[in-house]
Structure formats: C-alpha cells, structure tokens
Image (cartoon, rainbow, N blue to C red; front, side, top):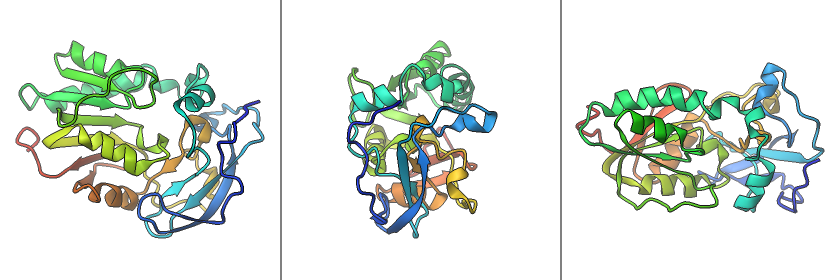
Length: 252
C-alpha cells in the first residue's frame, strides 16, 4: 500500500481558490490515489485507500487538487514516477516520443538552425530522436533529480508534451517553460482540455492521480494562464495547443 507522508491537504477545505484565475473553486469530487488512465482499457490497481479530493473553478473550469502541493521531487519519484509508471502510461517510453518527433521535425524544417527544448522530457527520448533527424534538440525535466537547467532566452521552440496536467503549480511551471523562449519563440504543448465534465465528473478517465494528473485544464483556463505572461493560445484541437506572442517568420 502506498503511504503518503503527510503530503495531502488535511482537512480538505470545501471551497478553495483557483490556482490560475483565483476564482471560487468548490469541491468537485474524490477518487482513490490509484485511479489511473489505463482503467479505460481494463487495467485496475488495488485501492490505495488514500482519498484525493479535487476542486473545480467556477470561473475558468480548472479541476485541481491540493493533495500534492507540498510534495518533494523524491515523493513524486517514489509514489508516481517510479518503475511501475509504465503500467499506467505505457506510451510514454517510446510510442509517444516517436509520434511527436515526426511532427516536430516537420514543423522546424520550415526554419533554419532552430533550437528546440523538450520541457518535461522525461527519459529524453524525444530530443534524441530529433537529433537523429538533424534538429538541435535538448531535453530538460524539472522533476528529475539531476541535470543542469537550460539558460533563459535560448530556444526558438519549447515543447511540453503531457506536462501541464502533472504540475501542482501551473503558474510556476508555465513561467519557467516560457522563460526558455527567445523573444519570437513559440511553445507547443499537449494536455487534454475538458470543457464539459460528465455528471459524474470524477469518472472521467483523465482525472487520474496515479498518473500524476493533478491539474486538469479547460480552454479557458489555458487562455487565462498564458495571457498572464503575455501569450495567446491557439487550440489546434482538444489536446494540442500553441502559445505565442507573435508568429515567427519560420511558422508563417
């Protein structure tokens, strides 16, 4: 059984303040810590008997939990991003990086000598695949225990695939990712937006603490989040988004 060392909100407040727009966010529901995304494919873990409470903002629709607000990197590595993580997200090791590498390589081929950073790159597989294609690609993950953080204002493109749903501090994470961009740089990222929750909201497959899905966005929450830093977001689809201040020549 997972033991979480005093890192959840206790007691849980019935009303919270949104982590993005500061709107009023009442309790939305509760799930077991072991709820995971692969349950939709029949992969159920034993109950951990640890309740994870989520709030939902009445203004921007953000769904979030305070349960992991005080967690250290060590706690995340021990309880979530451990050796069993591939069981609840099997695509992150190879399938997702391979698919993303092709899309990014085609995107940056329109420019000359563009420098790319895969933010939250995990095992670094995506950056490695891009380098094989001749792209000046780098990887850095703020959840890793080691590694040198890249310098600010260094990259033309920052990617963040399946990152924003994992952070307990969305403003801090986005500020850090955007700081790596050059003045005309753009950020391409994926995170599933859920603008309309079902009546039994906590049944949604993407609300999954065992996957580290602790901050679930809407298009409105992403717009508000990036607008605070002077960026606008183009929602390419429900999962894929592009943040920029102005369209660079290589993207026009």
